[in-house]
Image (cartoon, rainbow, N blue to C red):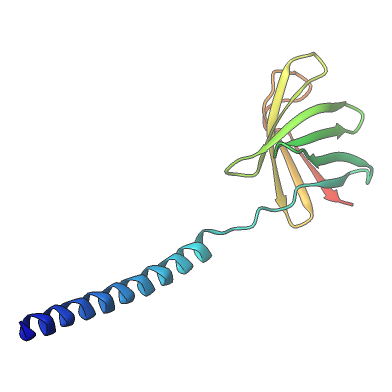
Length: 138
């Protein structure tokens, strides 16, 4: 009976030590995984000056629902004042209404304090797909 209790005690102690070792290893893996997967989202919010004429023509404001209000002015061409932006894989994707009343959209990417707006979904003849404009954060 005494041998049985000693053997049982040894098994319990080994099991507890193995569990503690695995728990420590799991915590270390969680820390490593967390550090690798956390990438801060760039801050798109702000007022940007048109690179060509140095006037404020890009306004981005974060909404309570996590989306963004986007207003894009293109000097002497148009003002897209109803844009909605969401963060996508390549930057901010936005959709607005063009001067003809049709949907228009594209992507905004940040490189430092410079925002590059590329139109990728346009049916308006005055603003073709691929049209690119740069704005510098004020």
